[in-house]
Length: 231
Image (tube, rainbow, N blue to C red; front, side):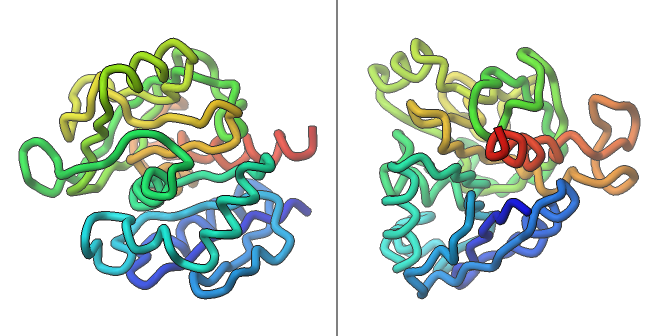
């Protein structure tokens, strides 16, 4: 069975949800502790949402130096699939696995809503089970969710097809070019602000592509990586 590590930092909130999503997709969820420089032989890693280290200094800044992150950075450069969700996305930018940065929402308020996304790139390890241009709905909850980068970086992301998701209908945090998620050049590292792990079970998530209250639009993040790993 494919083993997907789920990292817990002090202040992580959504590790259990991410682990459950992995199990529902058919994988084995393996807990990884921030202070251990040991990936336990996992085949992929999820950095879940929350407020790691209380978001002191800035969101994700301290987590970048956790012992487990040194192992994740090295493994990601060797091709290990890594998904950063919300705070996990912030950690990935701080660790320089993804470009740009996350700052406070442009309206300076915490936002929690069901968010429609367009799928812009289905060639990553985490999106291969989606269709190009598909609209999905997953929950979003953040206060430091505004993605920013200089124009050159934004142009490179656009030109290389590394914008993976865009906000549709409303940009909830002021992110540049409506960007909700991006990937690295190799496509094994993906970060996004919305929470697919909260939309993995019918009847318990938002309206989705399969109909009212279908609630499963996020599950294919996790089936995608399982399929990518088995070829």
